[in-house]
Image 1 (spheres, rainbow, N blue to C red):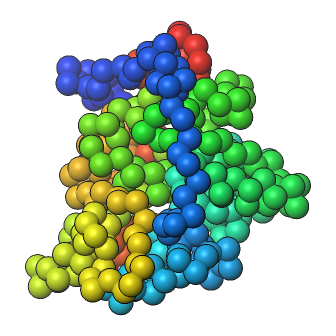
Image 2 (cartoon, helix red, strand yellow; image 1 turned 90 degrees about the horizontal axis):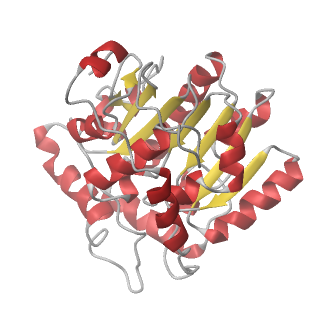
Length: 319
């Protein structure tokens, strides 16, 4: 699945430049943050609970309890995805990247990017997410830790809300390479064309030398005999949640499961680092959890920007 920069430059079917700055800015100006939702589970809080944190609410823990009954591999899947992001961060840091743009629903306490940013000198993080309840967590955490972490209220489906926020502009416009970390982000955009366009709008504006770290839930590669597991995953993420549902059971916003082929389509135009698109349990992991990495229920990839790409200029400007 690896695609060289030269091949991408010569391919007449290479992706066209993303939306113009004016289009992105207009979309961002029309966007309004969603109302604070106190009645549904938050994927960020659920993840924190699954990783041993204590920032979840009762409704998050109820959803997680019922979800694990439907998909017993879920606790390990959260840990495997967390481990992948940590290993990918180490790869980016070793390549000289010190600035990270973390996009997706997450809390800071058990976050692999935040943990390493605090431990690795010179790191800086901007987190872009929709959940305004999480903003208080990130703000308090940054103040208590005196950490170089900033928050952007945004929506990945409207990339201008990320790119035109002042913390992101500062992160991107100084020219240093950036690690774009997509955790709980790509799957929130159900239309693959729209998700691809949103990602392209971001990558076109990353400085040279930047990398993309991406994880995506998937049932791809499961043994045909595990059809029931695949159906339960689709039910959990895309339909009405685990069945039967207890009284008052509410699920988080729906997420889209994708195959490796669909995931590759999202990353089209980027140069995948070896081993390419694999299951998260198999990405440079010396001690895999499962004999069959498909049971990690998550695809993973790290990609570099191609050496030649449409000249779009930094965030907020045209080249």
